[in-house]
Image 1 (cartoon, one colour):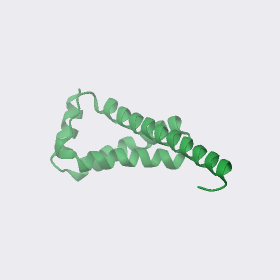
Image 2 (image 1 turned 90 degrees about the vertical axis):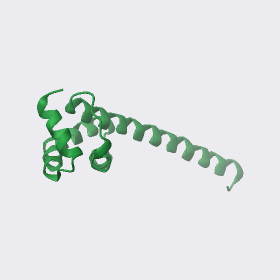
Image 3 (image 1 turned 30 degrees about the vertical axis):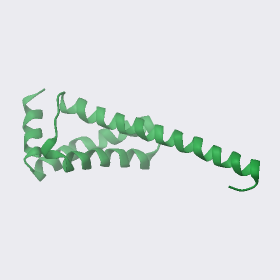
Image 4 (image 1 turned 180 degrees about the vertical axis):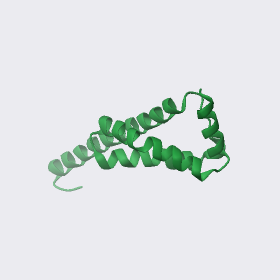
Length: 108
């Protein structure tokens, strides 16, 4: 991990809002584009990236980064995207199940 990454992480862990704002500004656009490439949905991509940054700030005192900051951010976004896709797939299966039940019985 680069020294600049360590410095930013320590500043954010200490509650430095300016350091957090700088991290957000530097990475938001790139991470949002990456999330969109995975999800193919602009609103979901924005939500994923915002959630990642919110969690960083909320958990800043316990925030542990064992890779480069870039790898951490992209990895966090990727995992949130995959979780969202899984939830969406599960919801679709449930919707199909409900529709089949309605068609089969006339009502729930």
